[in-house]
Amino acid sequence: MSVEYVLKATALMVLCAFITRVGYLLIGGYIPLSDNVKSGLRYAPVAALVAIIVPSLLPWAQGEMPRIGAELFAGLVAGLAFFRFRSILVLIAAGMGTLWLLRWVFA
Image (cartoon, rainbow, N blue to C red):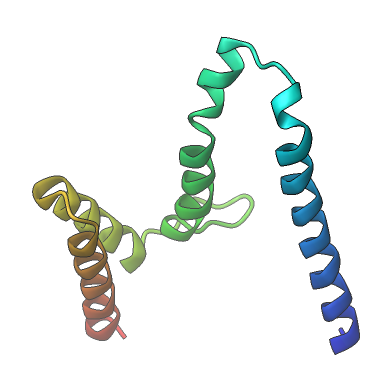
């Protein structure tokens, strides 16, 4: 894979993202959305975040069970820390600290 190919692919992805966002900003106000669609769109950011995080916490290959590793335990510790202290900084510190500790111990 050449550098030129990567640059062209990146430029096309940027262009597509720009067009979809600007397109909605320009004509989105003229398209009426039903209440059901509006309430459903409220959950889109959470669904995207879950789609990014879950494969990192439970990596698996086709035909295999998910592998439980340090990432899953660090995620659980981070979640418990957030529910206890309600601070995003504590969540990050607890999760990353636990991940680094587990990787160091089991390396």
